[in-house]
Amino acid sequence: MASRRTARLLRALETTSRISPAPLRTTLPASRISSLSATHRPLATATTSHAFSTSPSTKHGHGSVDPTEVSHFNTLASSWWDPHGPSRLLHLMDQMRHPFIQGCLASQPTPPPSRLRYLDVGCGGGIFAESAARQPNTASVLGIDPTPEVLAVAEAHKRQDPLLMQEGRLTYKNIAVEQLPADETFDVVSCFEVVEHVNTPGEFLQHLMAHVRPGGWLVGSTIARTWTSWATTKLVAEDVLGIVPPGTHDWNKYINEDELRGWFAGQEGWESPRIVGVVYVPGLGWKEVPSSEKFGNYFFAFRKREA
Image (cartoon, rainbow, N blue to C red; front, side, top):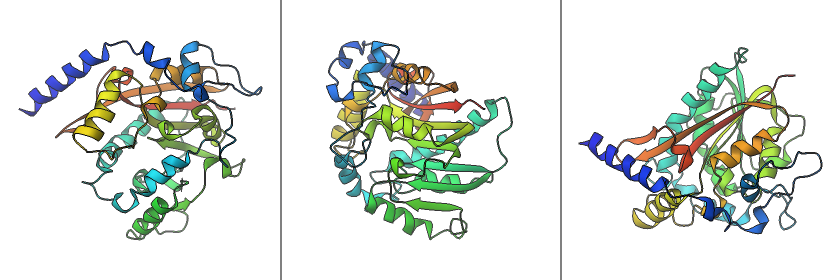
């Protein structure tokens, strides 16, 4: 019965995904149009230029941080660790994150370090940061987030596990990535479900890239900007089913897979792109679905070339 429901859902998603997203790109705010600094190559195509902005914002202390997003996630702090609450889909998605990262590490030409240092940017209440800190090959995890109430929840939950309380195992800081010391680098820098919540994604990604050691990985997940993603994440998830709090997503901030891939192609020293589409199937959780990155949620990873 479940398999028949899954098949019907996937057929419906495939049908919706055939609608061309091209007209949607022209509706993006002008503030998202790229104007890269002289130290970075310009975007190669018009497709990527609609979604990415690297111009520092003058409205806020840290250009990539959107204060309205901080305020929204502060309101969700108390329910962050409720596996059946507003963050339920994040808890379920976390089960797919580590296999994706392990696949990245296994694909590289040289063996990764035996003990990995993680930087989790936009860590929220610590769902991924905690699970990363529990991995047997983890040396340390630093989770950072500009949302104070949510980070307080992360600190409190961490204290429930003696392993996480070991010195240096898991550390949280209430800062934006722009505030990290410039020379601090990590084996894995993660930004799961974060890029679609920042003001200037190009600028934000450049800050993350600076903290990846040569040979390390930048990994994350986000959502394609299509009619399908609007229907599933805004109409169905937020308005109809209520499994995601209203106002969590701004569809105009979504980034298509080809935009992300094209933008990284214009950045010096990055290789081995990995993109995997995933679909949430009610009753079954998140499932990897080939080509679904074209119309919905997807994981991405890029490796910094070794010196």
